[in-house]
Length: 367
Ligand code: FES
Image (cartoon, rainbow, N blue to C red; front, side, top):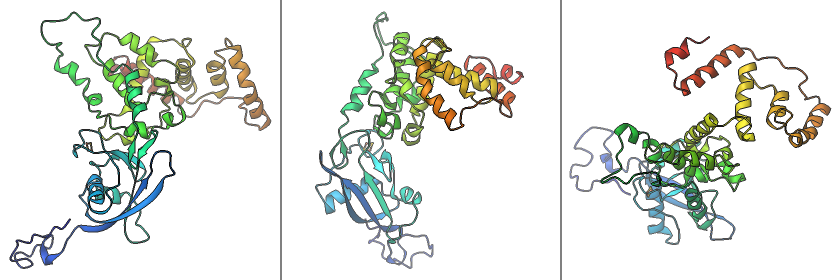
């Protein structure tokens, strides 16, 4: 897009400001960029197609895709609607990570990349991951919506007496929902979720962020049922492997992994280590690190998988691994606490006290 101010009759002599973009009849800030777009139809092999555009740093990736479609290739398919980071339609992978095309711009994308050898900077655009491609950058989001539905993303009404007017919340109660309420369901977190990639049962970070939004809602009366549901196997919160990708790519700062952590904590507060292996795993890990500053792996396997000699099948399953470690001289025969184990212990206790509602002053005074 040209930046020329053609109506400027004194062009080049009206001012001496060298930053004036109209000076000397030049398109200052405009450059050529090569867009490498992964294109694909359903059940076909993806191909790479390149398009070169004259663009400005401030152009969004969506602006550029629109121009490619309107000026060069009308067959290119992608989703868009609001152009303002509101509707969540334009999710795609830009230079390898999921993002909104209407939020990211050419300048910020190029700043993240090393200089291209050909001299023309390149931006790669691909469809989102973890969902099948319908055409080009358009993916089938059915599993995304189904998994959202699976966490019952509606405030319950069953336990409420119907008031004459609205179901009121205080400003403080409403503010508890702000962060999760920012989610625009664009699919970026789901697309880059490593856990979802290897575990098709996992509902995904978007669904669990919504689940925490329901748990935090003062009007919802089904907290205990919800926590039971989200505690199931690896389809709920225990399917999250804490890879951090959802937090990294979320364009709305919902921080889905942090929301999953809040649900886990509510489950851990209610369950003991006999309720499931996942709960035991977390509790044993914290206890062992508190004791020794790091994990005593001999005890960890026996306590988590063998359930402290209560689970004979679990113990037997550890046999082959233990033998292999012995043969390779990797079985830890003894255990030395780490340096700074006392500090580690006091840090963990401080966090635990903080989370259980004790004041910061009490935490600081602990040994
Ligand atoms: Fe609506 Fe990008 S077009 S979020």
